[in-house]
Amino acid sequence: MYSNNYTLFFVFIVTVVLGTMLSFTKDNVKDLQDQNLKADVQKTILRSLNFDESLLLTNESIEQTFKSSIDAKCVNVEGEIVECNIEEVDIEKNEDTLPIYIRMDNDEVQGIALPIAGKGLWSTIYGYIALNPDTDSVLGIQFYKHGETPGLGGEVEKKWFTDNFVNHPLNQPDGEIQYVPKRIRDKSGKIISIKVVKGGVDYSESNTSSIHQVDGISGATVTADGVTDFLLEDLLRYEKTLDKIRDYGTI
Amino acid sequence: MELFNSESKKIVSDPINVNNPISLQVLGICSALAVTIRLDQAIIMTLAVVFVLCSSNVILSLIRNYIPTRVRIVIMLSVIASLVSVVDELLKAYLYDMSKQLSVFVGLIITNCIIMGRAEAFALKHGPSKAFLDGLGNSMGYGLIIIIVSFFRELFGAGTITLPDGGAGYVLWRIPESWYAAGYENIGLLVLSPGAFIILGLVIWIQREFAGVEEDA
Image 1 (cartoon, each protein chain N blue to C red):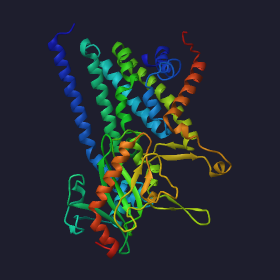
Image 2 (cartoon, chains in turn cyan, yellow):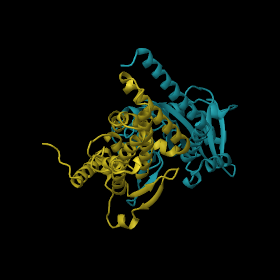
Image 3 (cartoon, rainbow over the protein chains, first blue to last red):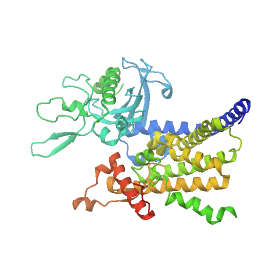
Image 4 (cartoon, helix red, strand yellow):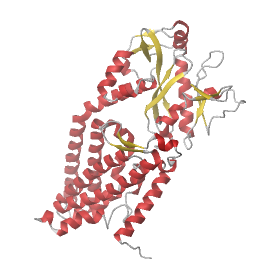
């Protein structure tokens, strides 16, 4: 039988040794981890803007592509450009410094990526939605960080779910089906965002708003409702900016 | 030398075959179901478990005569949890894509019954070299099963065979388009958890048949 003092002493030593080992490890790899995180965010932005996957294979090529083809700046809710350190803007807290990433090609806007974030079921979900220059049709959507249940809410980051936003089946007169992106504006041009519907989207003629709806995830209604809510909320913050880009082709 | 006599061989080979932790003892099933969607995930998971189980067995065996009996479970857990955290941090630094795919399941190695089980049943009663061999055998036994399960799940579920390559995975082989054109279809069920149950059940059956194990009625 060991004495209480010995037991306490032993536990103390073990704790110190293991704690030192952990902090030593963390200290050594923190820089690499931060680089990976940064590259992952940039990759998400580039993916949402529909860049070719072959450009996104290594951290270096991601950074290179990002630097050369993305115009990153901040705007306020009035649609005016404001000064900011874009990497440090917390979109969850900041009401009036909104990051915007524009894909430029020969001085023309090719796509606009906006950060989106909000509560799912267990966690805050982070991602980017990219719009075409018409600021109406979706170019892509990607999520990069969340703590939702793998297999249920975690499916938001999967290709089948994000593909929902760019594959709206339209019946052509000749019987073929053509796929077009979903739209965030209604016929009058007002931003109404996209709704994640429980079950699946009703694609019959009677459902006139199916172009503003995507299929939900079974077993993850709360996560899906969360996505619906923060998508609308976040898009509305950019309403004036998006109107400007649509009308004048620039901010 | 102690390392290479027949007893040592038995310590390594038994858990791979006749006393396999998954198929015979039915331990560590949770992660066996969760990380077997793709072969590359299963391989990385195997390496992580080999590292954690071998190190935890050796460390605990080295200090086994000093651990106060009353707090041994706490000590075992702390050692295992620290090792798992180290693996998790290393994956995030060097294999970021893989760590994202494995998500919580790396952290859940802590609760893998095989690791606590081997610590309690073997490492605390034997010397470090035997404990190391026992850890190696058991983690390989675990790895063998999840690699077999993931191979079939990926091949028939997704139609690919993927090896780990530091990024999003290297596709070694893919079912040719002509097969699909000829009417071949992937079995979607295998990608879902119930598919893992079915494959794992078949593997357990076949393995027990070969190992000649019969359950007492």
